[in-house]
Amino acid sequence: MSLQIIKSLNGQDEYVLLPVAVYRELKEQIQATLATLVERSESEDDYEDFDPADYVQNPIALARLSAGVKQSDLARALGVSQPYLSKLERAGQVSKAALQRVEAALATVQR
Image (cartoon, rainbow, N blue to C red; front, side):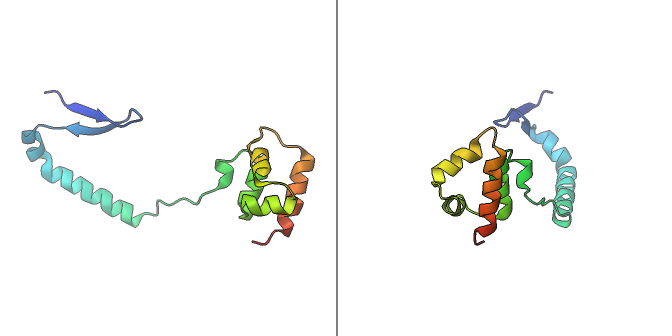
């Protein structure tokens, strides 16, 4: 007997098509396993806090996100446009002077 496997968009196995006779034989076992999984997921805290440092490489963007400040507010404090600040946050490298200026501006921004 061969089973048909349906893959997700990213190529991972996602579903298996079973013959009805096999499903009927395994139905109680499948339901018990699913119930256990639901109980476990409800009892465990699977939530992980979002840490920008895990995703953001640019130190200016990281400093702003960690401070909880919007781009527009930081841009205003720096005296630059929001698109310019966005460009700085996407830069591969940031000068030490620019980072110091951003940190000083973040200290003055209302949160």
